[in-house]
Length: 162
Image (cartoon, rainbow, N blue to C red):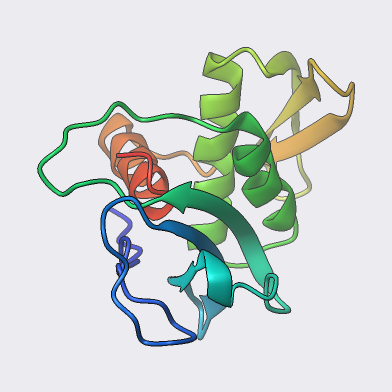
């Protein structure tokens, strides 16, 4: 099973060190550092834009710790992560991109077109963006159902959708 070891929301502004409390607006960045995905949070008033090399960034509002919430999936954010990981050479990036593609198919944003084989004999899904028409090729890392569930949970946690 793949373990990303990505921290969830820190509730501390990386720029000012100030604690982010329920109701505060924030910006979050997902970046690859040392072969791992790292999430960094910023208070809205300290946000100067995403740093170079960011895989994804998004804005949100700090929720009360005791308030249960439904995951809100932002397709454009998910596609942004998906696109930035296109040429990722490591297995974590490949797994993350594959599961993001599955989530986008489940949400009917991506449509399955075909399957092909690459030069190493791996299956490659051919997917079409239902909204923009772009065609994407996604290598199937041959994850088990349990691995797919673990990566999906990690995607939701990293993006703050859990």
